[in-house]
Image 1 (cartoon, one colour):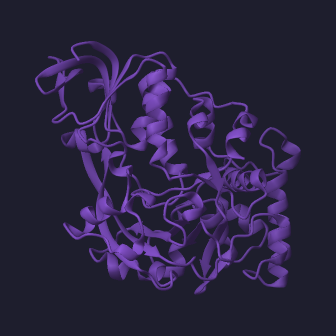
Image 2: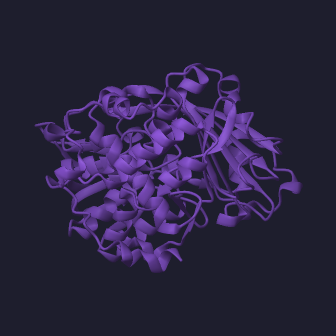
Image 3: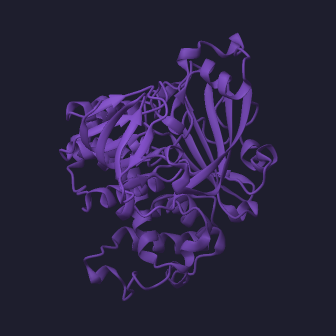
Length: 444
C-alpha cells in the first residue's frame, strides 16, 4: 500500500464510485478504499437477512417472505431518467457493458387525494383527468411551446428570454392554473419545492424536455429506467471499470485516517499502520466528519408487499411524487416501488419506499400520506438519517467531499453533485456529448 496515487477515494457509495471511474478513465492513478467489507456505503443494497439485521437487530425474517438472497433492497433507491445525465455518464465510461437496464412501468403524481398518471406530451395532456377541458387546451399549447423550444433558435422563443423570464411569468403567459403548475413543476420538471417559480424559466423548460425525451426513448409508460438486481450493481460496475484502467480497490480497511502536510493539504491516508501517499482525497461525509455540517434529515419507510401499488395500473415498478402543496409541507414526498420484474425480490413480492425531507422526528406519522397509498403491507421498517454537506475549502486542503443523498427517488440531483465535484477535482467540465445509441444494445 505504500505507494503514491493521484487520488485516494474513501467509501464505495454511488457518488464515490462514479468519480473513481471517471478519474480512472482520465488516466489518473486511483486507490479506492472502504472501511466496510461490502460495496455501496450508505447506498448499498441489502438481502433480506441483512435488512432484518439493520432494522430489527437479531430477529430472523419470516419464512413466508421467501429466500433472503432473492432480495436486493436498495438503501437509497433512485430511478434514472432514460436520457438523463447519469445514463450519459454510464455510456461515457462504457460501464453499460456490466449492467442491464429495464424500463420502469409508471410515473404518477398525487393530486387532490388521488394518484394520476403524469401526462408528458400534448396528446397525453388532452386525455388526462388531472385537468378540465379548457385547461387541457392551455396545457397542450404550453407543452407544444416546450417541445418546440430550441435554445439556439430565437424563432422558437416567442419573444421571451428564458434566462431572464421567471417560470411563474412564463406559465402566466399560458394561463395555467395552480393545480397544473403543481404537477408540471414537481412531477415533470422534478423540482423538490416551489422556489423554481421565481427562478429563470430555462431550467424548468430543459427539465420538461428531458422528461419528454426520456419518455420517448423507450415508448414505455415512464421516462425512468432501473438496473436489473437494483442499484447495488452500479458501484460494483464502476469498481470493475476502475480496475480495467489500473485503479486499485481495497475493502474492509478500518480507520482510514486522512493525513495532512504542514500547510494543511492532504498528503496521504493511513490504515492498519500503512500510509498511501496522494495529492487529493475524495470521500463521503462519514470519513471527514470535522469538515461537514448537518443540513437536514431524511425520513423513510421500506415496505415489503405481495401486490403492486393500487391505482397504478398494476405497475411492477413505479414512482409517485406527492408535491409539497398537496400535503401542506415544505418539500415533496416520494414513493418508489420495484419488484421481481427488476429481480429485486422473489416472484410475487414488491418493495416500496416512501421518503421525504424530515420536518419532524416521527417518520411513522410524517410518512403517512405516502404509506396510505401502498395498500396492505407484509412488513414495514422506519428509519431517519442525517444529511451532511461539506464546509471545507477544497482549493486549500484538496479534500473533495460529497453531499449526503437526498429524499428524491430519481437521480438528477445526485449526478449534478458528482459532476460539480469532477470539475472541482480536475478543473474541467466533463464532456458528455456521447453517442447515446451506443447504449441501446444494453437496454433491450
